[in-house]
Image (cartoon, rainbow, N blue to C red):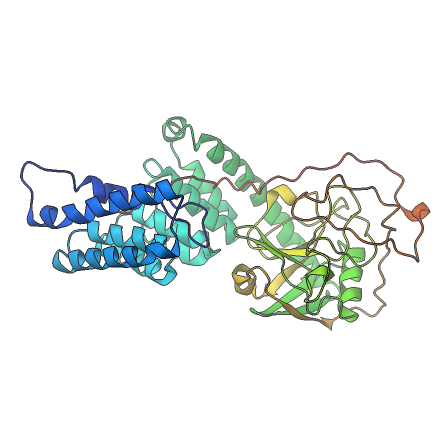
Length: 441
């Protein structure tokens, strides 16, 4: 059975209602519930085929979908112990993009089948798509998935622990998966292998990060900045000890009011919210994602002690070419291992990670206010745009910077070394599963 698209997922697993419809097949001896469900099952199958032929749901279909959902509700009311009605309600709510109803139906299914790990895994993935890792953990930790039977749910469980900085637990969950279960699932085998490697790396990264935070706490207080967004406030601590020039640039631009009124022009679930482009302001004639402050910055991600990407990191966006960051930055919603050693991390969220995870495209940065700074001027060392190593394409991840050269700089000030361009890849956390387990088993 095909699934509709929701705002948080490109495709939702098709198995939630499939088992319910399969159960509607003719039986030698049909119960009253079987007889009552049979026409609902046929109607859903016919509707599914019609939507597939027409390429998806249109607003003209909403009346039919709502009517069929009411029939499923009536079935559930008459046969409260039969899960098939709820499974159909869930599918129809997904087609209707009824977010509140989707969540309510998931909760009703789990309330009736507390130990249904497949349903819990499906619900958890739905929550993770919305960056709701803590809520997903509540669902999964109540009845942890059996790693031998529910590999996809186990991967999601590990991802949630990973996003919450419970790195050793995230690794332990995956190490508990029997080799037989991995070998027999060719589709998920590479994801488990990759995720295990990433989790192990982050156990070590987290130890280093905690040492760095302890060092920062023992030294001169780091700068703090309040990033006020249309979704709420985000308190940032800036890593001046590890990325001094990038921090100087951020504070310098904040003092000028450069970021006020800019937007988060690109937001990707389970990855980041990207903002800080002057072209994202209302009235700009240039497309968002192409702007900069008129100069580039030297990279600092290769410095000794450079910080890694964790949940709530703030880092500089740049082109694939070296030394091409400007003003655009991104806030991470979970650790991004593929961006380590390619982007400069220059701070972390102290308060407001929930705001970061709730950001949507075109949310506004209302103001950036420096609450604490060290006793010196913040003037960054900059590079001329013309003199910097050019980037290959404006279509590279996520957007490229472009703009006029800085009149105060000259090409001779640009870096003289030639570095092969880096290639961006999607964040590999080992959880890109294509299907979920049935919520009606």
